[in-house]
Image (spheres, protein in one colour):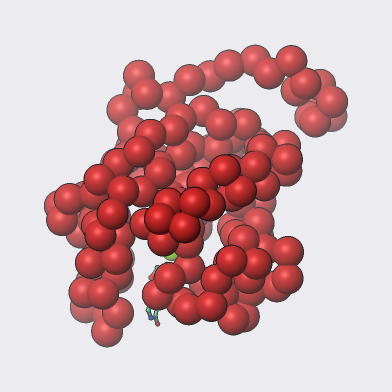
Length: 150
Ligand code: IDP
Ligand code: MG
């Protein structure tokens, strides 16, 4: 089953939106297989956002992600990577569609509340960066047969 990394960024945690955003992912039918609160240091921040190094917003992004604790989670489900990105909405909250997390709770691209892996390779790399193998739990959920067709 596909897995993806989700971060509830410092603004989401500071604003008390951990439950709200997590609820949306749970209600979507995704299964939580890893979760922890992390105070990001500069090495983790730079590793995570290495792909953006050199861009004009890079320094601000590193400061933002390390400013206050984040919640790091791994979610599992069919098509989880794309499903989560759609639930989160477009990178710029002003372009995100109503009903998405970034639309419903955000106004600025530099305060867009969440991170979600953008493809299979990224998901694999990011999960490995943020979680050790023994922090991930594969578990049978009693309602699985009412969410998954097979
Ligand atoms: P994503 O989070 O939707 O995948 P990316 O393009 O990967 O978007 O950018 C990573 C993060 O960098 C964004 O979530 C946002 O917080 C920040 N970011 C992207 N573009 C800008 C910008 O133009 N100004 C400020 N911050 C930006
Ligand atoms: Mg991205």
